Image (cartoon, rainbow over all chains, first blue to last red):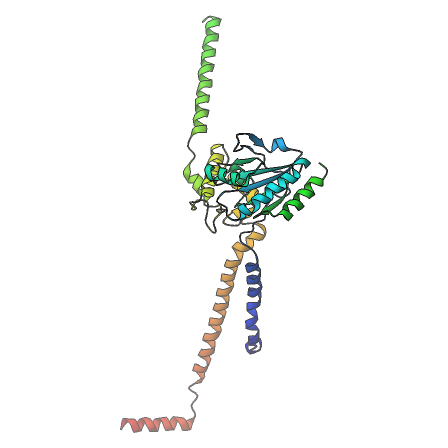
Length: 177
Length: 161
């Protein structure tokens, strides 16, 4: 029988297994591709912490940066907060709108967070989580970059850095409406 | 019946009918959503903030809100399929705890059973081969020549004495 001749090949059976494991361990189970990139951004109407209504519809024609955050999200949300405020001040005159959406949070610590960072862009709570599910948010912070036509163009998971903010907003702001 | 009275009767009948449909419609909208239906959908959705827990089993705030959204959509008249489709549209197929049985994902469902069947077939073949191999030498063992037979007889006689 030829069993003796192929016996040396038996350990080779682990090779595909090793490939599978190598692939599996390198992918991040927390990284979820968003099916929303390239699609129209879901409309929403919320009331900001200052009591002003804000809707995506009213921002049509502007580049919209939608940032989902929570006061308990430490350190990522605390790292990106100053970046967002600086980015907002830099781009607000170029018809760029930054909107913060506070999710899975309580009002008091959320207000404290806003006070701590002195945010001057509108922030609104999403008490029923409807907007976060509409945007397929699974954690904080998550940031969506929406173009002038109201399409989701990019999603960033984790703290936004100055580099990312500038690259995304610059790209969308220079696009013709 | 005079025409004005007939008209009045018709009008009141219409009023009663519309009131009834209004009540029925109102009752329909306010009817509590079947919690089993909510649970059934939630059990098929992955809790987005936990690992390997369904929305039905997670005590997290997000899962609670998602159950609320399921309830709301069912109350609005969505079918369970439509509710699932909504979550898939927002989160992708990732949100489903079990991949749909179609296309490439079908492999996930077929391969384990195919592997099990293949393994069983291999075991069956090997078992048959091994049992045959041990049976053959057993049949050939009693090849004893005349000298050996005489020696056995002699030694048996020796023992009997």
